[in-house]
Image (cartoon, rainbow over all chains, first blue to last red; front, side, top):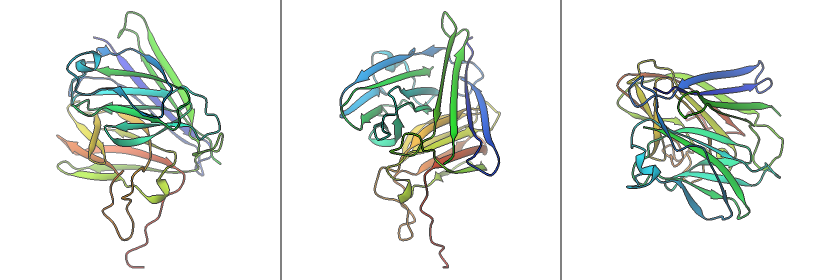
Length: 141
Length: 153
């Protein structure tokens, strides 16, 4: 049984009157068990040069890697915008189906659970058509 | 201007045929800037009862088209316990006991909560607990919220 952990630390010395720091480590288990997740898409790196909507992870497919991600379980997705921050105005909108979640600016990352049901694609739309590079991976059962 | 750093490490010694370790660190900057940090935040710890889908973080006009970041952790310990996290009625996914998420958040849509529209919920982050009540902690790092006028003002 594999053991995969995800650790986050958020820290600031000056966002509040005193130091702020929070840290957590989770072990990636299958839904409702203490059995570790044992499958992953692997780490992907992809360049895009479009300001159109692009499907990154296609929920509910009947074939291909994404078809192996069982819906409504405990899949986790990591996405990072590899671009430099530039002037701070270029970003990638991350969407769940047609609903925008938020913006990943250059250097930003996110780590979320993913229901992976049919139609619940993880998509993105870049703020312009210059080249954008994303890294992503999905852990699933 | 505050400096806030969010770091992640994903690691496993036996998921693949070789060690896997991925780390990344980011500064939480304001929209349209190269080095100006977000300087507002809120941090909550609360108990979420079962049976109802609740608003966890409500959208507001000031949070629109900007850089905000959300952190949520499920502090329960029973592995069967989970919460559903949704945005605009779209389920993002389930956080089981001990799981956390960190994601950007943008109030992209038009139906913000306001004094005249307390039900505005287009981009509201919602939460629903299953099996047992849940203790969760969550943080919102942002660049300003629209405060609601008190109903009795």
